[in-house]
Structures are given as C-alpha cells and as structure tokens.
Length: 171
Image (cartoon, rainbow, N blue to C red; front, side, top):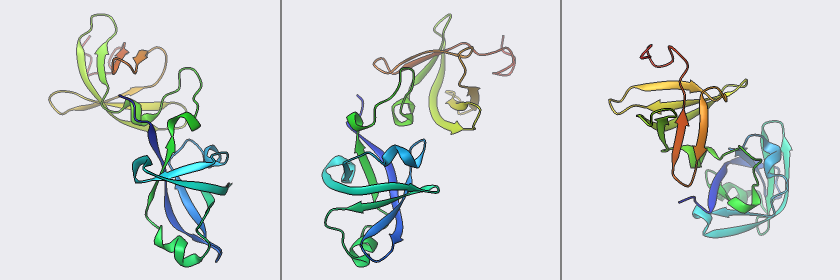
C-alpha cells in the first residue's frame, strides 16, 4: 500500500529572527516545495500552513503560520516534514523512491527472482538501483530502458533484463 504522506525534508536551522526556517529538501530540487500550501509533521498527523517557501541555493526557506520568532523556529529544528502525495504529482514513468524501496526484482524473461530493491543512488546521468540478493550481496543496475523493463507499484514488482556481465556474467 502506498503511503498517503511522503517525507519531503528536514528543518535544519533558523533563518533570520521572524520564524523563518532552513529546510534540507529530500526532493529532486528545492523548487519542488515552493508551491505547497500545507506541509505536515508526525507522518502526516499534524498539518502546518505554509505562508511562503522559496528555494535558496540548495535549501528551502520556509515560513509556517504560527511560527513567528527565532525561538519558535529553533524548537522545530530537526523535525521531518511530510507532504501529501496528491500535492506532488509525477509525470508518467516517474516514481517516488519511497514507493520503490522493498520492491521485488525479477527477471523480465523467466520471472526468476533476483532480490529486493534496497536503495537508489542519484548519479546525474541516470539513477542506479541497489538490488539486495537473498544471500546478502548487493548488485547495482543502471536505471535505463534496456535494463528496467517494467515497474508495477500495485504488485510491488520490478522486471529487469540485466545486461551481460552485470551480475557476475551469470548469462
């Protein structure tokens, strides 16, 4: 089951004396949080109205309703922020990393299970999926159409076609 709320960042410090905070975004870019009207604490249980959010270098400067002093902002330091899934639309073929983690990875041709998707590295050219095999070994696959054939969030299954030599030349 996909979570209705997604972790989107962490309050790392204050900014100024009027309750503004610096947020380390856990999105593709800080700009992703600029249009959000409501963020949440405690896994989505506690809504917080966003008065303004703007990208500044690699962080987001955030002002929440009711946080008007540096002391109030400091009290929120270290807290994780959440966003409602419906407030973060994705393009076709895009996925939230949180939805991919733990997904079963199988061979696209014969259904042979390889393991579970345990991590994602963002390298710039293309992402890299970390597959943890049943024996504990971790193998890396590039996220390219020649390798990742399909991703089914409903079945929690990803089908891949490893390039020759990708998994110790087992072909």
